[in-house]
Length: 203
Image (tube, rainbow, N blue to C red; front, top):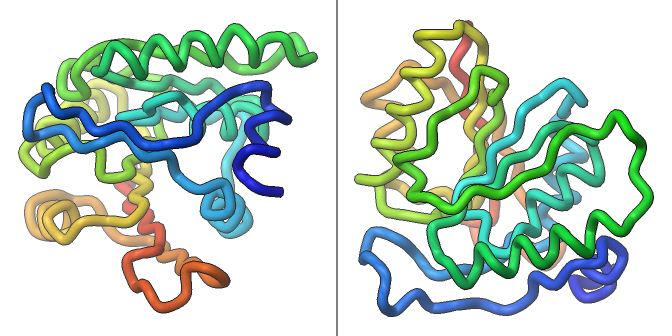
């Protein structure tokens, strides 16, 4: 199933890229995670319906909708760009037209800078597709660690196409440990950056 077909199934529109020319240099352009990559990720990485999933730099919401549709867990998409945020809200209206069971977890989007999002005690999985610079990433991880200090729990960081700066920071400056590497095959072969890294902080 190609991206357009999957978008149609979810009743959303997430294709294309968007250069954020007027935004801070700390924030990268919008580009959605390929559905094929998400399929590979969740064949190898287990999620539970009780998880709280946060999608940083969610853009139009592809990952957020995919995760909510697959696992029915609580999902929060964080996006600072007004145009993309409005696209995500439009997608949410259409997505809600699908038939969902009443016990589905809440799916919501917040417009804010990632480093200002107040991590909820129920948030335990955090997704990043290189949405911003390592300086912002450090602040975001700091927010996550503050939440963990207040409400002890294990948390995972899921990095797609991980940057060396992110990896170096996590491995040299934090207690997060690499627990899983998921290399993407098929059309991704030949590019070693096409992978997911899962970093975990134990309770």
